[in-house]
Amino acid sequence: MRRLAQAPNLAIATLWVQMLRDDGIGASVQREYLGAAAGQLPPDQCLPEIWIEDDAQFEFAERLLHELRHRPQRRWQCSCGELVEGGFEQCWQCGAPMP
Image 1 (cartoon, rainbow, N blue to C red):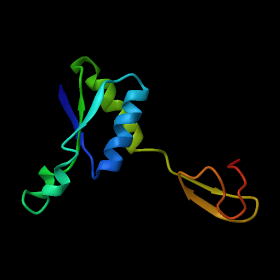
Image 2: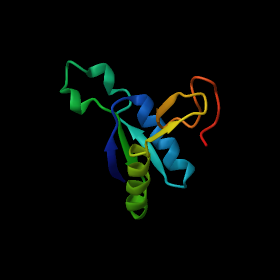
Image 3: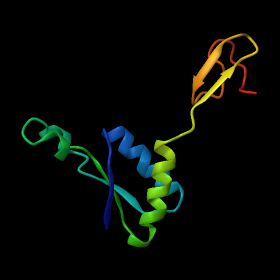
């Protein structure tokens, strides 16, 4: 087993692990209940961690996590005139899909 990353919170850690599992990588969340010790322990030691079960899958897991954390950001003009930024694929003004 090898530690892949620390997540900022348990919700993000769970999403990352599920994404890795969906791609066939054995992953788990460790330190998921240490948030209760925040204040007693240094904050960086209370963050949840993502661990990869098979060392042979570690590099693939690193690439997948990097892609997830660095999603492309778009900027497009909707036909209704609204400027849509970020990872949105649908206009929040009129609901039209991204062209």
